Length: 443
Ligand SMILES: Cc1cc2nc3c(=O)[nH]c(=O)nc-3n(C[C@H](O)[C@H](O)[C@H](O)COP(=O)(O)OP(=O)(O)OC[C@H]3O[C@@H](n4cnc5c(N)ncnc54)[C@H](O)[C@@H]3O)c2cc1C
Image (cartoon, rainbow, N blue to C red; front, side):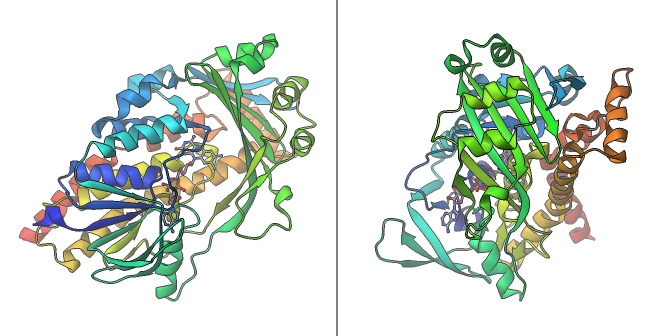
């Protein structure tokens, strides 16, 4: 019975959770998620919930809960970091009309919890928290070692389908590519991010800052080699700030280190040339609570699939945050796997049928996810321009927006680019691809 196919998912991030839920909704009854963390303690930071993500979450039955805790963005304001002068403004009201779902922003914990709660309702999903996966062997029946994160006996587990949703540091990716004689290590993007959350109480005494937390605005302050993006979350009780700057504070850190305890002084120094209001805002961060994340990427992989195993999310397409699409793309992966691996698609349960289904997943997802990876990198380059011809051109395009020109230099807010991202229903595309395959098979 195909619904009893043993599916192992490594990693309970957004990609792993969405994949498990999609597979359970498609009828699978034997899904195990292995997560090295002992509990589902979700990172405290905000996240943008784009319409292409919302469409999938709604179909999986967990959007309403996430939406109820989120804030709708009515507009976006792109400003010069040094002066706070507005360069461009986009009313995002059309997003809901055009794509059914508005552009929302929320708390990561709320998104992850919504997916986790959805998974817990499915009897076909088992969580193995505190389980560290290593030594993955690929082939028709993938095998891997499971070691309790707190120490203890290692056990070898076999499955019929293995999905590596183990994030940008993915050891599944490294093992898969090694088997193919390739390397799959992530590389530095040269950029790092501070993630900061200020409470309404902290901003209370500063009228300029209060205006920010009260607005339904995603604000981006841009400058040479850096920018800050910020928006209110949690019913406007928290102001979420995410920055990007050169990763100089990681110089000398071991390659595998992705986060470092940042110094508030160093953070203020990086944004020294930004306007006084931004200084006041960054200065509210509690000393000792500054954490800096190194942003890592890798070049497009030769493959995401080997035998009955495939990669999901940041494990195969880590995306810089400049289009706010990394988690959305991981969730799209999960939704497409739900279609391609549905029990009816792999009815005979044969390894070659499973591999074929995984190849269809890759065929549909790889070009789209990799195009968005490139788009995000490009947007970072455009937002981080220093003085020169390219910046003058960019700022002219910003100025032209005021007279109604449609093009927005911040690609995240550009209607044409949004339509390529929000306007694509990957589930419908996956179903269509399956139908096409069946027609070809009948010929
Ligand atoms: C600053 C910043 C801002 C961002 N903003 C947005 C945004 O606004 N919108 C958006 O859509 N995306 C955004 N993203 C991207 C998004 O956060 C990621 O793309 C997404 O979280 C990736 O999910 P994932 O499940 O693929 O990987 P992860 O979330 O990294 O999950 C991987 C999981 O695998 C587990 N794991 C790893 N190795 C093992 C092992 N050996 N055994 C067992 N478990 C293991 C880990 O513990 C982890 O729980 C942002 C990213 C950054 C850095």
